[in-house]
Amino acid sequence: MKTSKLIAISQRFFISIALISFVNALQADDKSGVFAGLQIGGMVSYMKTNSIENGVIQIDNLDKNVDFSSGVRAGYQQYFNPYNGLRIYATFDYSYFKNIGFDPPKFYDMFRYSAAADYLINFSNDDSPWGLFLGGGYEWLEGKKFLQWIDDMKENDGETKTNGLFVNLGLSKTFLNHNRFELGAKIRLYKIWSFKWVTDTTNQSQVFTNPVDFYLSYSYIF
Image (cartoon, rainbow, N blue to C red; front, side):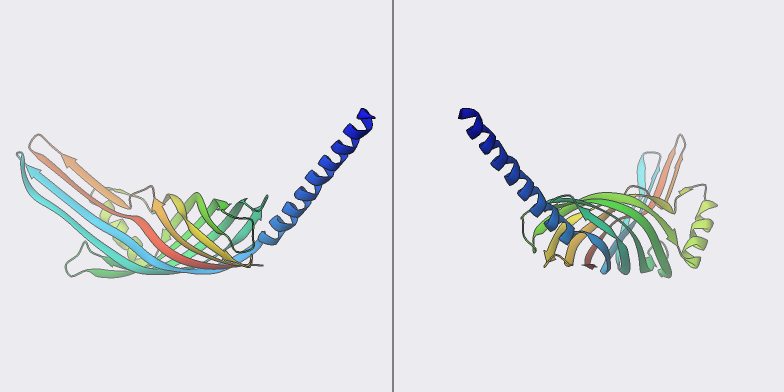
């Protein structure tokens, strides 16, 4: 008798687990799929220049700038349950870049291509959850006049880099499983140009970088 009750309880337990798993799988499928979207934001850049002669500071400048950027994204996201998922995607961004290293400043067209992957977290088990995302990727910079400026900077014996790693993170809000809005930041782990010259009496350095972009994006999950 006890054995029969134990078997019955075990059956109900495993049936319950199976039903929960089935429902979670259906909900995960509703949140998964190919997606495409748009994004707009601001590209933060700065030029930092320092010069010290015989221990006396001659130059100590930090010129900052924010340029408008826009772009598109497309990829695939897969949820494993209503709370956790992964996505892989590619982006293409455009900025009308203001080069604050010149007086007056010069303007260049800058294009960015990237491939990335993010871990997705939802805070609730429904079709319109808030969430977080964290990941990263690799990007490449393009633009005829921009790359010409980079080539010119190489003649100053500095280090230049037009591609590198970045971290991507932010807050998300999904509506009805298919409409996803994100407020995010792309943090770059490389400097576009850096120069340093040190002697017994002189210490000079100059850095140009675009450390972070802030953006608002919308994606539709098919």
